[in-house]
Length: 583
Image (cartoon, rainbow, N blue to C red; front, side):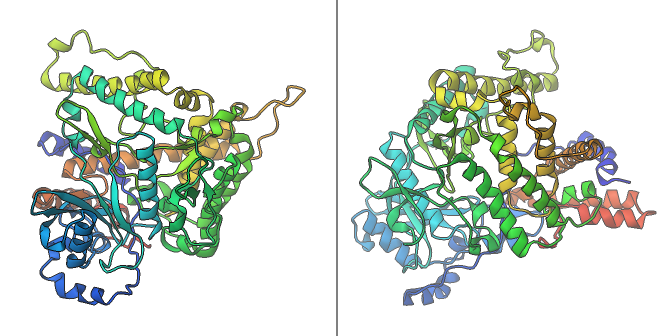
């Protein structure tokens, strides 16, 4: 009995019991323990002495995890020298350390801890310290500092950096000191806004993005001050500037995760679009050849789709090689599509600050930002897209149902939410067409661009036992080959360099459907337990979530009491209890 199928009846039961709790959607980034950099300063020896008194500052306290919690907490444990952080914060404000009144933690995200240092006169400064798991060390902070400075110079409202350190220092941690941007997160009001209010916000977002697309950048990579790069690391200076800003290696974590940080590979910058397409796959091929070994997919709900077998990295290497053979055909004919373009990574309502009258005061958190060819970075931010809806895909003008007033409460809420999502999707694109022609042209200018973007992302993803998604994308290119191939002088279409037999095509289609079932299983389970898809949960809901997880798991195992083999497979596939993440 398949796990996904065995849960359907139980899901209906728990739904009727009122245990279906909507959870915010999110994508968990890969995490791993990364060693802290060695400390050269004697003051760092005192950090452990401060640990007991400042434990709350050093530990993750903003939530819990339903599984592998000890690993998640260890990844985010970051002792530092509190006295020294106060000193450098006061110095950044041109004040003596004696003027420091308080230092408190105000936020913890996926990669950083945010602290606020307040002075006796009320002035304050934010200190952002990356967790040990955050990579690349040194370069992530350096790139974000340079990116923020370039954005401010181009009229985009982002926090001002007052000081930073990317190396060994007396604080015993990398840090970035920033002004505190006024405003509240858009997420605090986003779902409650009227149509006109949403339009007002979207107009400001698209206007910001138009400034991004208008920036003249010489290559793909990430932005740095040249002084922050090792002497032998390649760079291309941004023309027209005399402050040392340049394009250097990609700062995205996929380039530096685990053993990848030690690979001798080309990390950019690149001024040829084919080199960009190739480099992400070459990176992962190099890692597979040096370190790859069979393993289960890290997304445990996919194990059933793969027949409960460990996946061979050489199979993924074969897909990457097929992708590389396609690269010459993936670049659009329009050269404006290649324009190196910076975009805000994963723009969401959480990292947009607004006033009470809905004026955007800041776009925050540009960590891991990359410059890529326009057609590769084009698209609707995931928080605003609604591609799963046929009406949104067809760019239909959204409207509420005529019979809305006669609907029951549940149906009406569903219809209003569908309309809200359609409204956001439609007006983001409509405003982009009106205000950001370069983005519109890059997004809509090539029929195969959507497939190419997906395949490019999959080729560069960290391999953690999932051989399927790139295979599925390759199948789409083969099926739609005429879209990608340019006609020869005689009008003939060149032969596709990747050949997939029809039987294999069908296997991949079946696999795609099975993976979607796995996604639905995890989403439904997360909603039933009241946790995020990555297993994180608030302190208040942790006990109830654990009880529900145990109840559901035991209910499934009870159904399978006469089938011990299937019960063993369920436990292998179950993503909500502790498991070996390297297996």
